[in-house]
Image 1 (cartoon, rainbow, N blue to C red):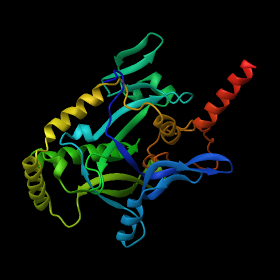
Image 2: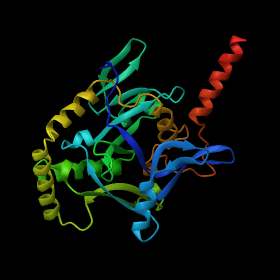
Image 3: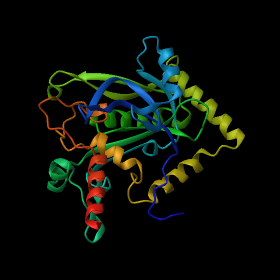
Length: 309
């Protein structure tokens, strides 16, 4: 095992309720009022849709995808949803500081140090760098790949708080059988003074349509017994995931980071919850336009080439 590399759940697709679009040659965040399920492949038009997107959209009856039947990978709620206060370097796309409100791991000139984490509102370093909550939820859609997941990323307190509560509640009422509960991601909306009365959308987790809570618990027990009889060791899977997450200092590394920074940490960040669950929020014509991370990196490469000449 390579030390320093977080071993995260295999991802075969993405779930979003927002996107980054190109307008007048500039990449801007844009919110949406429905889910989009994509592959991990991008083309000139953006992320390529996953076949599940079309199939579930047709079954919705309205053409808008506002609920997705899912199950969890793990019985431990904290393995399915990981959330921290995160600050990324917008030039390189690398994580700089990740904390939980008590302690943080921060990249310094002396390496990675453990420091107190007072949360972004009480941290001058976090306020200057644009630190904000950042959550990742992994779920299973369909029966094609029992261990392959779709990831939903968000920087919204609304989604993180709601998902954390639901996962813990469902785990409690089912006797710890979270991984076999028939569940459903549901899109909800609300308006606040901070959103100027415009709707903001966030993610909720409910019992799958067609089940009562009691029926869902009974189904969870039935499926758990079937898995156990077949030799499926859920406890060992949870432990393997726990060790995998703990193998690295930061979860977000590699090729995914530039896209994460571009979508969630644009330079023109008002740090409000307005549109945060649209992945990158919203922007107006009067707002400063964020420069894409890719454009920055391209300029740096070009500058280095010129210096080499």
